[in-house]
Amino acid sequence: MTDAFDMEQSFELSEDILKKYYELNIEKKELEKEMNQIKKQIHHYLDETFGKEQKGEVKQGKYKAQRVIRSSVYYDDEMTVQKLEELNLEDFILLVKQPDTEKLEAAMRIDLVKEEEFENCKTNKQSQAITVKELSL
Image 1 (cartoon, rainbow, N blue to C red):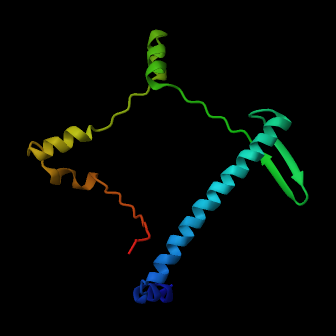
Image 2: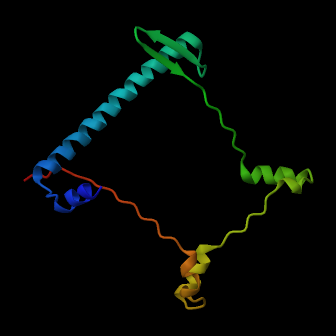
Image 3: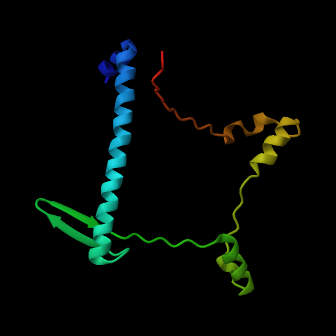
C-alpha cells in the first residue's frame, strides 16, 4: 500500500488526464442513456408478455432477463398518528426526542448557549466531487 500512496504523492495532473476524465464522463453518460433505453424496451416486452408490474423471466441464447417486483409500504406519519389517537392506540405511537438544532445554533450565535458545550456532540460531514469541463479557448 505504501507504493500506491507514494505514487499518489508524486502524481502529476496533466491536460491529457483531465481530457481523458472528461471524455470518459461523456461516454459514461451516453452509455447510461443507451442502457436506460434498452431497459425500457425490456420492461415493455415483459409488460406485454407477463403483465405490467409482474415478475417475469426471458432467456435469449446465453442471456437471461429477469424482473423482480419489490414492494414497500409507507405510512403517512401525520395521518397515521391522528388515526391512532382517534382509536385510542397511543401505545402504537413513538415519542422521538431530538434536538432542535436550528434553535440551538441560533442560541449559540447570540451567546445564550456556549458552543464549546456541544463540540463533542457535532459531526461535520464532507464529501468531494470532481467536475471537469472542456474550455473553449
